[in-house]
Image (cartoon, rainbow, N blue to C red; front, side):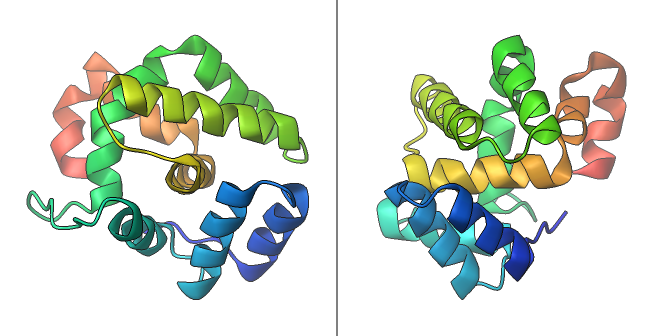
Length: 150
């Protein structure tokens, strides 16, 4: 799935998080890449880490990162709850910042070098596709569908 934010969505987020330097960096990168979350992720990763060729088949670097942390995101009721709460109240800057901070912590535990800008892109991707879509792949009942849908 190639998720994309509209210029209006990016502008709303810029206004929501005006003093958050990493988020503003992520949003500027999104503007430069026409709202494409995967391309923006790759650009930020290249800038921060330097290496973008982690390809395993047809999956993007963003998808590979999500695969590494999906179980932790979907298994963490607190993080899932924050994401669901934000979808009900998308104007809450503090809740969005809390989700981004939690994701940075989850990534660190898993050895993934993720700063606030990269985490912002990941969180926006999760919000765009929906936590239920992301987490359906961690459900053992859907394990057979995993290869067909990712």
